[in-house]
Amino acid sequence: MAIKDLLWACPACHRVESIAADGRCSACGTRYLRGTGARIRAVTPDSVKEQTALEWLAQLPWPDLEGDGRSLPAGLAPPFAQRVLARLATGAEALRRGTDCLGFIESFAPSAPGRLELTDTHVTFMPDQGAGWSWELTGITAISPSSSALQLKARGHPVAQLRFTDGSLRLWEQRLQYCVRHAYVRAGQGVITEFQPRIRTR
Amino acid sequence: MKPATVPEPDLLYWLIHGAPRWLWRLFGTARALGQENIPEAGPFLLIANHQSVMDPLLIQSLCPRPMHAMAKSTQFRTPVIGAIMSHCYGFPVRRFQVDPQAVRVTLRRLAAGYPVAIYIEGERTWDGRLQQPRAGTVRTALKAGSPILPCAIAGAYDVWPRWDRSFQRGRICVSFGTPFRLPKLNRRADREAALPGATTTIISAIRAELDRAHAWLESPSAERH
Image (cartoon, rainbow over all chains, first blue to last red; front, side, top):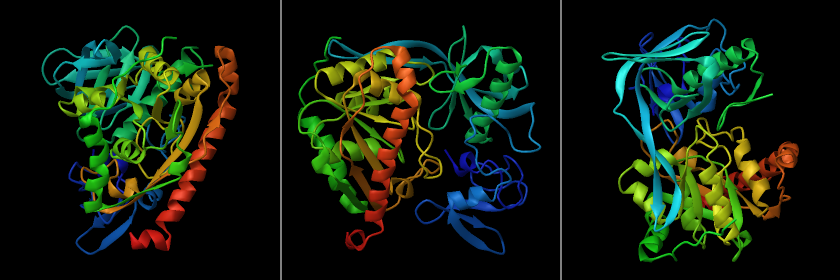
């Protein structure tokens, strides 16, 4: 996880997903680093400014990203594309302590680098090598953020784990929720009321 | 439902239980408020906010009783940490579905008289604010009918925010509120009807503890620590 996941656009130049993993904005060159406590320091050749995460977020063109996919920042509309590391679950095994079954944990295939594309109707992963997958948004049953990845589950498919090497995890969660919400409504599958742990509609 | 029987805490458990408290003295202060509110016996569901990766260790080390805790399934894949988590009464939950086994283990452990900890936000906060509560936690609470112990963690976000890979020295306060009960509802329709009110009750209780914890962090007594 990095500052790029929190700041989905550069507060200085407002370019979306321009902050790299090292905290530098590829558009304006401002570098964002952790300051004291949970404050973020913005460093340019001329100035140093330190603020809380909330204060930086307030400077983004669309500060509150907790909308459950009800809307997207102005000017942002599908299709979207981003580089990801993706892997699919290959199964789940029981975790035991003594004879007690504590639960189940997934096994994953190795991660593959590639490109994730999100349109009004499909989410598609195209790996750099080999075959990818494409799922209809109306079949998505869960969009679940993990520490540094998004887990995506579609009916009849294994869970996919997506790690955004260049993009913002928070923004992609919102984009996926937005596109799935609208795909559900268009297909007459109802209005989504909950995304976690799985999608519920009314 | 068959109550769970789990092994008694062993030396490894108590070492892991005590280590964070002692280690943290090198890096800052971890203060507990309202420890007298923690029931000495019997089951309860500790429902807390989630600020940092340290939260499970903080709660575990500041509670006098072994806490059983739900944690995301992928963490149990991590070598050593996964083994320690299951040794210290953690159990996995798969978060991309309603995980019936995780709910079953929670209810069985409560039925056997153990305390279980759940984070109501389901994930760590990005910006320090309390996030939207996950309905699954509240549904589980209504299904269990056990006492609920509201708990708030403050300061941990400043020490180790989700968007950074390292921690800094700092002061943390964990506040335990007065336990309260929600009705035990066996019918799904009843639980769904009670969901909004129960969610508000739990979140309000956590907010009150969060205010108390923040007040302590800003007080002169915190400055002395």
